[in-house]
Image 1 (tube, rainbow, N blue to C red):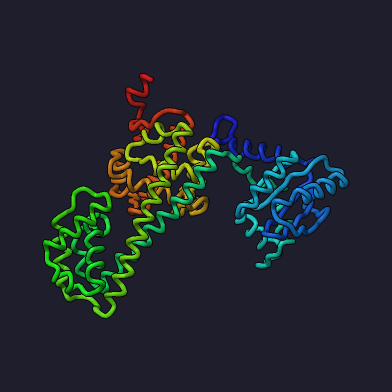
Image 2: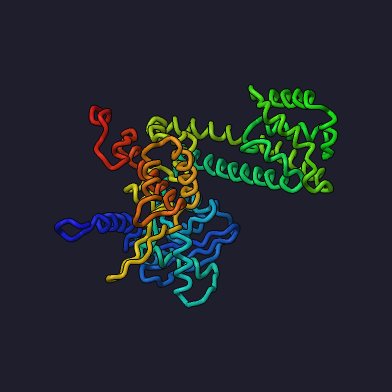
Length: 448
């Protein structure tokens, strides 16, 4: 879409972005490209035509790069430049250190995506060669071409939320891995016990019964049968009480006790496998406790940012789920539009049009995978209670033309959720289902 001047909205956004980058990399500045490593830093000083003015290897840590920046500024001044712009790849944590050292010296600081460097490396000499010398020059060259970006500013509160979000994501992954292992092992040595509950590992009673069966039998399930149904049930109730649950499910207790008499499975492996399941179960409970504690901390940070009421206005979106998404964004307000946030997550569909040919659109898959995963997980929970998302999912998966698969529909809804979060946070208005469904604002929003 374009206005009367023939300049589209995308053109205007791109022009504005290039203007901001040109302020950070002006033509009167030399460019300092740094290939960061642990104890060896390659630094080059170039002009805007990529000619190398100086090159030096500094064998020191990232925190000691101040001397390297001072050396680069002196070389740039000797070549007639009024200042320097520092460019690095945002890998690991060292780029933050370089950014702070540059800011202390009043130097502009930009980042170059590692993917851009990889493409440029192949285009440079048509090989897969990778050396620190070449990479530093490529980083400086891409910055001179404005094929770089301004990194998000360091913020204490948002930074804390991001670190907590990374910890939560790893705990979730660990919890899922533990459950998958506990699910696989009984199917080999004791296949009757998973069928004792409709959703194994979710009911506390099932987990408590499995723990009691191991503690009393240590692989010999006949000892549980000898124990008797009544004494087994009493032991499971005591275990449930120790796990802070209130109502044990007698049906599950009876089903696990009945499964002890089932001979199916591999008896020779039963003792070792059930011991491993018991250890995994203890670890899983510890993981769940740490996961709950991390979620509580993230919710507190979200309240500190004053965003709790806005993000929880999205029906079906939990506070922890919203905090996980925002932790990966670094703050939605730094994106010019909701679509820019969706692109950052790699959920924007790519267009494939040339002349009269139209190709199949797919999501880019680039961007920030952790943000994409957080939005995907949040949509799964929101679909159960959000009528707007549920109706949209039904429409996408059942329409006659261009019908989407379940995974494609979930990706579309994850992108919609990111756009909605960007809108409610940047405007300060609560989520309105009428607007989300493509209609006019609801009465409450109009009155406000």
